[in-house]
Length: 407
Image (cartoon, one colour):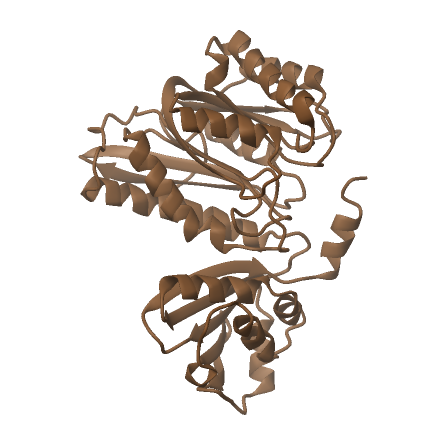
């Protein structure tokens, strides 16, 4: 597997476009489209929030139906959540606009939204945006990158990645883009994500791979403890790589799954590092827990704790914050078995050893915690379970951003 330049347009047959539709923002792009003329086998995962945006309901119905997908249209101004039938009508109108412009069935068009909850979408601007983008679709790198920028809201950087790998002697490419900066918490973390590949694979197997990979990637990040109404991750495969269709869990399937994990993990980490107001990527790596699920819960609890996040922001070597978060996670463990370390590019320092606090060098701890990527390494000494979770520090700017978000 090789990481290559690109995102959603890297795979054969995928094009993208973006435009400034004026849905919420002025002077910047706020709509994007990803399109494949060849119909795509599709898999998806969606928010666990009971309050689901109209676009989530629309997309989930398409994915569950087994119908192919040709396009996804995204807007980054209004969430289209808590909008009733009018919100669903906006989804239908958007899909119908794609049908008219690109001559594909409306029920092979997914839609996605992010932004303010409880506002109605301006359908005339949506449909005008679709018409504009249909005439601009392009398979080049720039078109994919521009699309990744158009879906940003409070994100400070766009997020995209592509990898290439071999299946049955054929070169296969998997690319993707995502957005997410606030309202991020499992399950499934707040985000929009769109993955494209020219692989040929059975739909059920692709869904299985995506659902499993999400568990250890996107569901292992948290910024603020809020699970969004709009979380959507779609994976589209058009089969243009020409490989023999993967129909069983064999070596080819495992190769694809590894590539999918790399793409999802990278996008998840980019989102965690770009959390609203964040200055650091905050990672918790738990090893030797009783079970993998225990390790997941412990790691997520550490990076989700506001006190832990504040300590990381302040470069405060208060390891008790992390132990406390582990203690209320719901996992039963013996604190006398635990070792805890601070890690970063500046070094590694043990601060807690089998239930006993160590007399560590505060200056060395400060140097480690001042780096922009900080890891809390925790050895439970109780089994073989291992997991990693990603979050960010809690800064003054987080409150400022969210106090003014609607206005």
